[in-house]
Image (cartoon, rainbow, N blue to C red; front, side, top):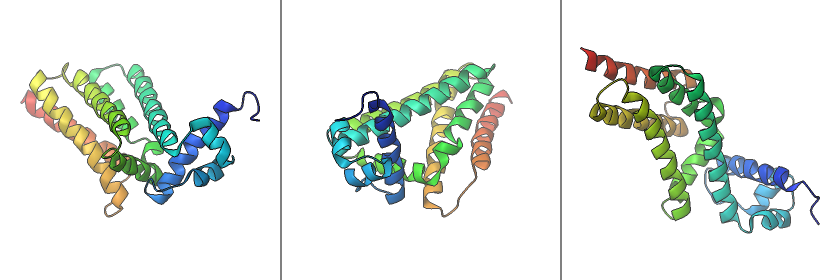
Length: 195
């Protein structure tokens, strides 16, 4: 029988372990036993908390997207101007825990799974919409709406593209360089609209 009060702790440990194991494997072909072992619990307990590996994987995507959302909200509240809010969104997108090799590998595995799993796809679409919305909302205060939409699409594509490049490790780029490159893109386009 599970210890009273341990469920939230063990559920978090299993979600974190799933992200690490998936990142290490680079795919979702992991077993509940591998995840449970990484979390320090029995496979039976993992099944008790989540029912199936698929449910654990969906919860893993949901929890990590919620953490990213919380980081963005905190960063936006701390930034006083729309331009600083844009930089904050970019910084959060490339923060160390999001840009770690195993995290990038896990996200790519989730994107591949989204081709088969409607629920995983739904979560990733929500992520893409939030990123775009945060960019557009702040860009609209700095330029016309049609330009804001276009520039936001380019910035979001850069963020996704830099993740893919990082995962391939063919041309690894540092966190600072990724932030600077994306911020430069915004600055260049905003300055071009002024001139």
